[in-house]
Image (cartoon, rainbow, N blue to C red; front, side):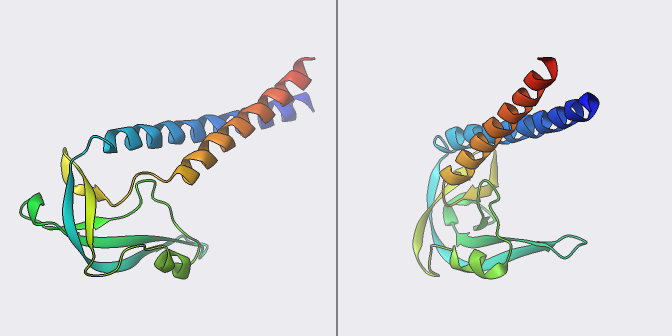
Length: 150
């Protein structure tokens, strides 16, 4: 029984560490994006990028295409969520798009890769879920280990 609990604690600890690493990556991206140049552009297209796994479950992300003449040769940038936030169905992804076609917007452009662009900073709720999920899994893991060692 102790071996099973130990295995469970290690799996939960691994999940907590994984979520924490994702949290740190998104936090670093948010801080870096605050220093990225921003260019003005015009929204030209909305679409939903849909991806399905072999079991039929889907992941749908809203993509907004923005025309930015200041970027260089390829003025059309395809902006999605910096955290790659997605939805289980396409309809909520479509309704989450905040900008209308023809609207003037400001785009965060990665100075190292001009085709990497976002309309907004990483979502705070997504970051909060990663941080809290990480803390929860690590706390449960520590509790199990404490119970085994006591």
